[in-house]
Image (tube, rainbow, N blue to C red):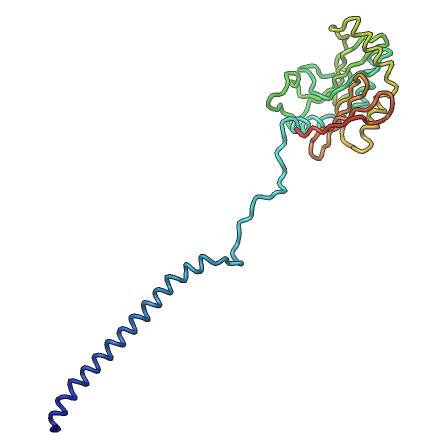
Length: 252
C-alpha cells in the first residue's frame, strides 16, 4: 500500500476514533450527572424516614397541672377562708342563746340577705356567688346555721355570724309537733358522746376544717374539709362510744 493511501485512510480513522471517545466521555458525564441527581433526590427521602435523636419534641401538657375545681369544691374554697369563727365557738354562742339548750346540728353556709350581726364584716369579693348558689347566699357573709334543742325537745333555729361570732337570729322551729319534740328529746338522752368528743374522734387523723356537725339516730355526722384539695370527708361517730363507724369522701 502506498504511503499517500495510508495517510488518507489514517486521517478518517483518527477522526472517527476521536468522535467515539467524545461520545463515550459525554455519555459517562451524563450518567454521572444523572446518578448524582438521583442520589440528591433519594437522600432527603432516606433522611426523612430515619429518626433523628437530636430532633426536638414539643412537650406534652404537664400531667401535674392542677385539676379544675368542681362547683362544690370552689364553694368550699370561698367560704372556709372567709369564716373567722370555728364551729365550737359558734356552738357555744348558739347554745348560750337557748336556756338549757343542747346542740343538735350546725352547718357552715352563707347568711341570709341583710341578716348579718352588728359589727360583722361582709365577705370580700373573692367570695362572689357561684353559679347555682342558694338564695340565702345573698349577703355573702359566712354563718353557722345551728339547731339547738331544750330538754323537752323544742328545737330552736339559731344563726351565728361566721365573722363576728354574734347571734344573728334565734327562733323556735314552727314545724315541730309533739311527736317530733319527743323523738328529739329521746335522741339527745341516748347520746352519751358529746359533739366535741365526736369532732375530736373524727379529726384525730384528719386535721381539716370542720364545716358541719349533726346528731343522727345513732351517730354524730361530722364534715371535715381538706383545704389542700377542697374535698369533704363525712365521718359518722357513734353516739355511745368514741369510734368512727363509717366515713365517706366527697370529691365533687
